[in-house]
Image (tube, rainbow, N blue to C red; front, top):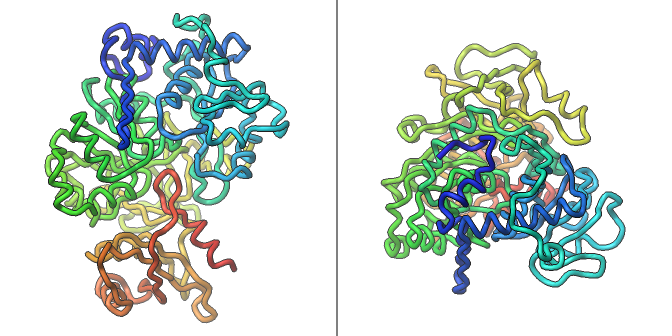
Length: 514
């Protein structure tokens, strides 16, 4: 099978080569099962694409979509791609105000939405919109149902395809919003090295990829769609459930996946009796990404999935993949996110703007590759501020060791300064989560009259575990320098997460006001 990104439309090629092969499997705990073959998927995609072309959707136009994991949110992305436009995912957890802020920046001409989110797109708020299509549920006045919109459109390939570089279409991704409202990131496809990396991790087209997380997040969405384009099948979970994930892995002999740490914590935290019910030996490649997996979580995963090859990718919407940690180095290099990915150059820069050339010296990480983004939609100033020559940054702080392996300390914005010393919350969180009684943690800085800031830790205990504050503080004293030990602790039932699986530090800080 040819790699992702060749000139021919890969979905059409796969539909012709393996028409009856399952492309998408939507299997839910309530017994609902929908299996869509490559031929059926390509026909649905073409009908939607032809409907878009018929109403004048042209090259470079934008469509936003909102909905939970299902066949229709995958189909619309490929339909927009074939019509030569951008498709933009909206996080289904966003409020109406947040959705409207993104839509005003994105200026889409069409919306494709599940019925649960149709209320977000009523009235005359958006001057650019020419249509709102509801694919799941009844349409409101001024909107169209998917059936009405598609009508009797042909299943033939759309002609003409406005964008001749169908495999390398411009990509518009909105960030998770870790440091504020999501930004629209403009990239022009994936570079050759990134394509080869993803193709190598996903296999030769015979694989089965389970989507772990929401398709509105770039990682699961990109890897899932790329699995389709190389001829593999993908399995959907509409909503994540740890035991049901195990059921799907066994039932469909899943070979690979991509996940943030949050779902894996729940999977590894299942009782041993439940984990033993399911055969997960088919899982050959798990890609750890979206946020750093603590070393303790990697150990737990490798204990539960001994035959799985655990890879780690560090990157972002802006920079694509920056580093790769191979299976052989996961336990040998605790805390590392690996070596520079193929085709990627990295610079670390100190506070004086000087390039760091010595190991173990933290600095702002800049990356250069043919997959790095080309701008923020409507924010040229923010884009310019992220550049250093041909290199770009998302303000992550990192260092490298004597072997050239990189370690991410934290986002510069998350760093706190206590008594003049830089403290990286991620380092404290990693130490806390190595305690057997701690499920998850978050560390933020709280104001202190004497020290400026002091670290405050929020801790989610493992189920049925009773923790004492002094026990945790003593554990920290044994594993961290004294100035990094949290000044205060707080036990909580859960922590807020974004749809990407990352901790929502902004929401945590908002709890404390000023």
